[in-house]
Length: 232
Image (cartoon, rainbow, N blue to C red):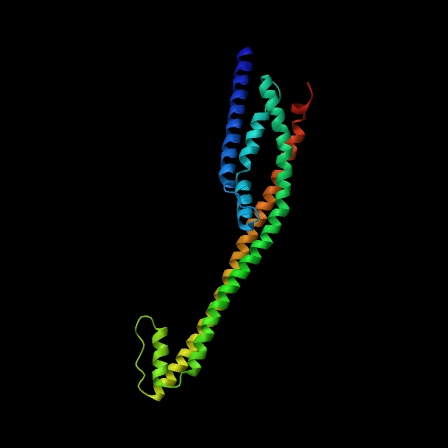
């Protein structure tokens, strides 16, 4: 019986050391994640939140291992440390719950910025296409059309325009090509916009739910470690 108790005591001590190690690892990762600080940058705040949530199981497991066995087999210094960690679980719960509205707000801001960026790029491309359309409309001679086709064909494969009939054919083909290119660009832009939005919403949902669950678990740890906060 005495040997069993001795082995159990050694096992508890070992588990606690593993818990402290996990907390240290998480602390180092968090410092790396937060450096350099870029508050007011919604993309950085959102990604930082996601990185922390992805790793939040590490401190939760570490704290559970540290709190195992309550105040048994602890030195006075460790008792004070455990009391401090107990209060830190309350702080952790508050931080996790505060991350939820921050994550939602940043989701909206990132989506708006992404849409503005995509729209700006689309407008630039459409402006270039419109410029080519105007040049095509103004090109009435073989020389003007030859020069326009040469500028558009960067590989040097522009055909020689020999007569008015060929001029009309090339002008019609080029007009159709420009129209198809415009429709393709618009379709690709819509696809990119939808894909980015879906990816953003999936990450936001995952990380906000993770923050909620983590907040509840930290609160349960705080509630379950009332023994550490009792006045001796």
